[in-house]
Length: 114
Length: 114
Image 1 (cartoon, rainbow over the protein chains, first blue to last red):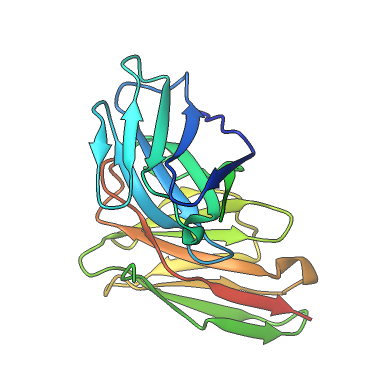
Image 2 (cartoon, rainbow over the protein chains, first blue to last red; image 1 turned 180 degrees about the vertical axis):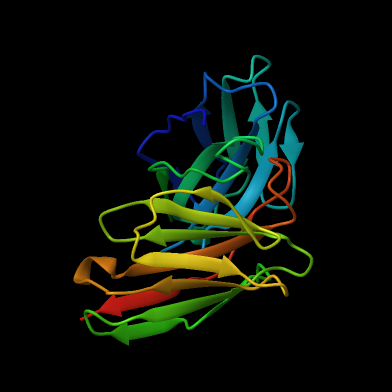
């Protein structure tokens, strides 16, 4: 699986946009970038994923660079409830021994403060 | 609510005992994944099943086993339990193993071994 690099922690003021970066320079052409978050030992929550194009849903936006070597998750108006560990994961395509599982790294601890 | 149901939510048992954790995947999902999260480790992939067959294996101990039944629910069996097995165990499911199919997680089963 392609490895990802994320900053260990970030801060954001409530109401402002939170921009979480992720480097994945060894990503392969058919691998997706996924973002999950985990709030205090709850189950990881799916946020968004993308392959090449930028994506937006009701939770966040995902910006993937043209060379696909990095991406940014954007929470447009962060709230205190967005405080969590955010995981950027490059998901291997099904096949071989990986069969599409998610490999979690250490993630970024995002703290949203008032 | 992700649609993935795990039981029990909490379990306390003694060393040397055996427990079974149960997972009901989202309706229609054929692939089930098991993860372990202990205090000093991140989310560790244990094993994956697809439509009843084992597809990928991670850091799963020989004392642990899993299976997926014809109705697609899955069970994770943990035997000869040790103190170090105390952890959160998550089940997740997806439609298939393809990397474009989102994986959704349950809320986990807290296992405490005393």
